[in-house]
Image 1 (cartoon, rainbow, N blue to C red):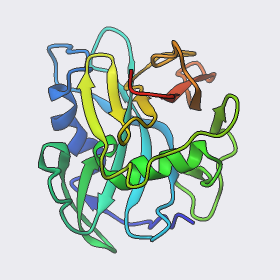
Image 2: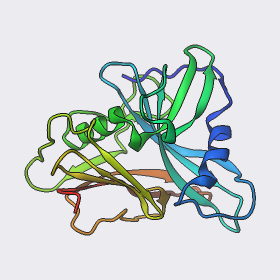
Image 3: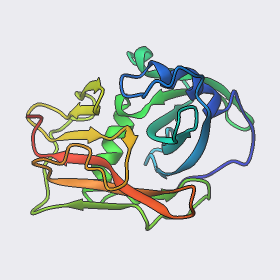
Amino acid sequence: MSIIHKTTLTPTKLELLATWLPAQPWYAATQRAPELSKAGGFRLDDPKGEVGIEFMVVRDDSGDRPAWYHVPMTYRAAPLDGADPALIGTAEHGVLGRRWVYDGPHDPVFVAQVLALLQGRAEPQAQSVSHTPDPSVTAEVAGAGFDVPAGAAEASAVANGPDGTRLTVGDGGPALQVARVLRPESGAGTTGARGHVSAGWPLPDGGEARCRFVVLHDTAS
């Protein structure tokens, strides 16, 4: 299960995202520098224990009203071959040393574990507490189980646009739509959806919002 080290990260995740977020096609430009804070999220385990997988909710207060973004990230001890365009940045971890931080949908380990979560083979973990499942995160699939072609994660294609990030998994396999701008009860492209991963995040008034972070479609069409 996830081990959370209580240590430093330099630069911090939010400092890395303050530079990276404004360059993304789904970011709502405010003509001001981002004012970011962490607003929730969860983790998944890498079965090999090599790659950190975090689903972070980031709040931006630089506009007239708060905006919430979903930024899945992976953390690696060495660069991921062929993934330079997906690199958010590098940081020095107080325990683990240099970490390469990637936009999760471009990382095959992230894709494989999201599919495992939807298939009931992975369990969501608390974002900031070691060895602690997070039952508030739910994964649902309608009907019978779905098949994933062999080597699908390695063959994934990624389309990053204003409506979020679309993953084409394998040849004729399922597709994943990753929500980026979070709105309560938003569907993240739910037309024809087969399943989804849902989670929540706190609101300024003390309430909680909830929506679909990832939506599963049977095919890429």
